[in-house]
Image (cartoon, rainbow, N blue to C red):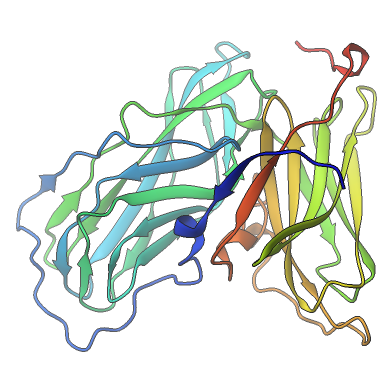
Length: 348
């Protein structure tokens, strides 16, 4: 396979704790050091996105020790900076978001479910908050940054890529059992600009368990004409992008577009990641889905996966896979195929 990696993103810090949805039990609770009045601390203006136009925002972290029963609230908001639709409202599709806080005896990780937020140009829409209740005494490391990220998966929008620009901010609030609160405030400020991918709905990805050699097929639906998509199979650790297929849905092509790769016989039994990419001016990672590879000498077991599609896909279906059982993922940027002027879809 001929590909030209231009940039490698190591996602260890964002993904290492994604199997944990809470903190571990401590031997004995202690009193909270949270002040009895409302206190707001300023978020440090640090935030960035990767090449995928995904969300990756840093902020100030809570500090001190908090007693069991303290509730961590996290929410985010999106502002539509510009859109080709002018005054019409646009929709931004957020994948599952992950908020991470350095703490002992274990990090605090809070997942926010996928959300579709709609707003006009210049307007702001706020997602529903995610909450997590601390079960045991927890000490937050105030010298480490807190983070909110979309686990390398791109935002998607209702406008063609490049015709929509948004900014995203987030905040956290800790509320103790006696009602005292501490908040980060909204940040970062200024917020980095993000150009979401145009929506491409993952209609199916099958099979979810297989014995190699066997094909895996992903089918997308939506405004796909004139766009180039790629399906890649990858082993997460050690990282190996071992097979891929990139094709372009013609300008007059169908609204459902399927890509297939064959998992070769030499892949040992393990969980692999199927990545669905969109090649625009940048490379946009749209979906990550887990597939279980069984022993090729036997019939694959009925492995199954917890939850539904809403747990495993981005956009209108939701995200998963990255945040389930993966501690280290390296994503390699791939340059889009060379296009001739005749290949370019009409814009407007």
